[in-house]
Length: 109
Length: 114
Image (cartoon, rainbow over all chains, first blue to last red; front, top):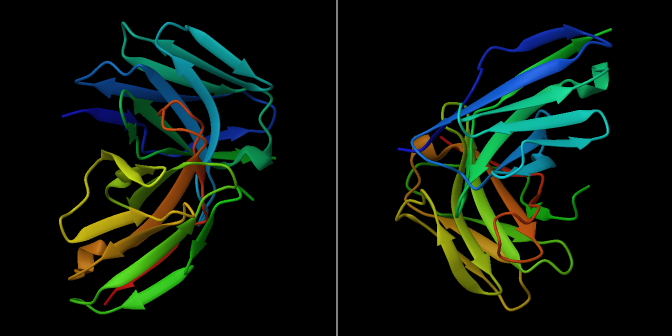
């Protein structure tokens, strides 16, 4: 079955560093990947979409890569801030979205 | 604020009961999606409606049903509730039917089945 895997362990980093989150997918070839941010008790918020023919996408301090050979997407937040602390969800799509369980990011001052 | 509203915010009920969750999409959005989020399963796609018609179906149980009304609001009906149905239920909306369209999520309804 289609699987989206994200690191279940929280990522702890210091303010100002670059956070890198990983998303791996197995058993299918999604046409695109999306990244969302979710704060406790709230709905996910869309951040970025990258298509299979794009290697990299940027938006302000965010960067996403899509490696179809490795079946992996990396999500980077540069110059991280405590306000970036949240759970980040990866979602892969072909006809519907399949979400990973998310990785919690904790940015300490 | 995404512009998507969901009611109620919290719902506590007993096993075997039936509940209805309601969602109003953002103004102008024609698609509504329903998701279930639990600690062990993560965010699971249930069903999508586009302009009143069912568009895509995910892991939705037969005990669950949904519909989208002419004013585009949607309802998710959960019946014969079991303890395992306790979860956060999110509604999302998008402007059209393509899954690459940005989905805007509501604040969710937290369902507790006792």
